[in-house]
Image 1 (cartoon, helix red, strand yellow):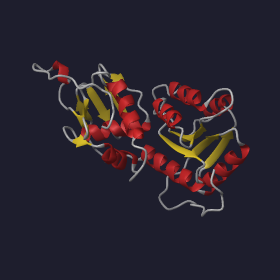
Image 2 (cartoon, one colour):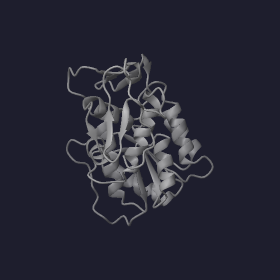
Image 3 (cartoon, helix red, strand yellow):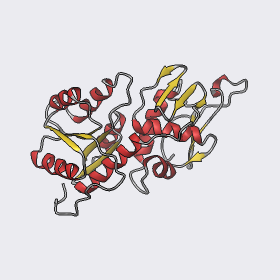
Image 4 (tube, helix red, strand yellow):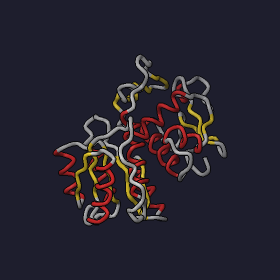
Length: 266
């Protein structure tokens, strides 16, 4: 972690505050992170391992979890899986994962199990606070009053209630998956490259584009009939993704050939 003598971000007008659970077995890291978050206006609880984190989350559901990937015993991936499994139809608790710098495989695994964001070690505590703010702000943002439900191909999304169904069944979407689906539904037929999605959905002007790739893959696994042959979120090679609105494409009288779902460049 970067030295902690940098400018403290502190609370600012209009920021969303809430309860944050910090999970890290390194007491120094945990203390510094908790201190920055508390000075930024958050209520912070700390846990040093996976079981303690799950117990804390069960006692008092946090608004966000800052979760170290490399925990003793039960690692951060398993903790994230179990947090997701406990959602019980409610919106999932957002998770910001702490990963080792340069360990892309671990970073992608964290996103695959449902982390909403990540920060690599060594990291700036101020950067972490800004990421936490960004995730919580998006999680608490309300859709405009009276906005109609978004519907296409058996999908029904209520942006205000942050609920999504497919053929009437509730979809267990993470924060970013939900926002990504809403963005696609609002921009049907448009080719969206990963840079645009990162800017519009994540609110970042730069970052690791594999974050977008992983979230598209996870979203496909939940909304496509055959995620290996996606008909709704189509890959436009070398350009990005395009959402196909209307009836499910394979139900149309003249269905076109499917596009395989290997996400290389797009």
